Amino acid sequence: MSGIVFFRTRQLEKLSDFYTGEIKCDIWMDQGDCMIFRHGNFLFGFCKGDKAEIDGILTFFFRKKEEIDDYYEKFKSTAEAPPRDNPRFPIYNFFARDPEGRKIEFQQFDPPVSEYLCGDELLLGRRSIRKFDPTDVPDETIEKILNTCRFAPTSRNTQAYYFRFAKDKEVLKRLSEIRGKSSEPIAKAPMAVAICSDPELSKRHIQDGCIAAYHFMLTAFFFGLGTCWIAAMDRDNVKQMLGIPLSHYVTTVTPLGYPYKIPRAPERKEIDWFVREY
Ligand SMILES: Cc1cc2nc3c(=O)[nH]c(=O)nc-3n(C[C@H](O)[C@H](O)[C@H](O)COP(=O)(O)O)c2cc1C
Image (cartoon, rainbow, N blue to C red; front, side, top):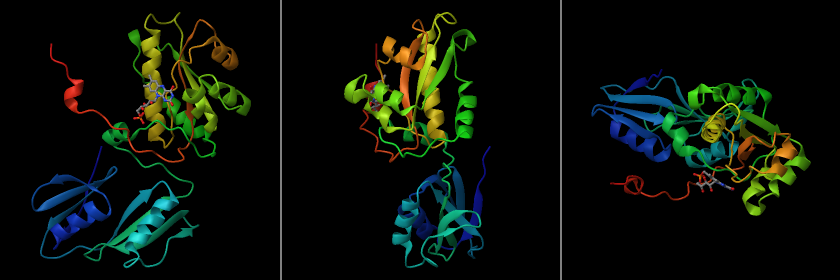
């Protein structure tokens, strides 16, 4: 399901430059006399007309207060006042104007709410996170993630995978030391999750576990959390630490928490590389 909010404008080109250049929106669709912009999953459009519709407020929300502060620096000249905590809702926000005088708002929910990500933003934006905020992950968020993870595909729908959570600081530290630098991120997060699978339940338990782990990572990102695939954790000492039967497979043990920062994507090869001719 989706929708678009439209406004009439007398300055389509100017607005296009503003919303793409200054607010970093994408052009979702250019129909000539109407242009539709996308900010995350927020779709809004402007159509050429002989009068500008400037009522209402276009609100853009972000995960961190610093992002609001950065936008304030940019839009100081049209801002009504500096960003402030508004305990009534509660949010951190300020208002400014677009070039046609339309009110625009930059806000952060407190506590932070993760943006609703579109499918491609989810797939393109997920990163391996190796440094985390110390904030605990609420139980309700974990429950939402797990509910989504019930829908990972499995061989013959065996559903042979499961999750083992670790929060104990000492356990996290020991897990992080298992593979030196490669496993270090585990101790930097408030918790870790082993994604495991049971060979008794599925002949394809390794594939089942890997897919479930990636499903978990994408869902976690959707809810604003960071993960990192830590490989080669299918080891007896890991299983002993986490109470996992030795015959089961540990796909990965990922750290889990709110990212300290989402890094830029490491460089990717061009499409040609990924398509092979026979
Ligand atoms: C099978 C696999 C094993 C990985 N092992 C580790 C690891 O042991 N430690 C680590 O920090 N990152 C590990 N990574 C994360 C990769 O380094 C990362 O996915 C890659 O650099 C691309 O970055 P991105 O995930 O941010 O797009 C692993 C990823 C995969 C898929």
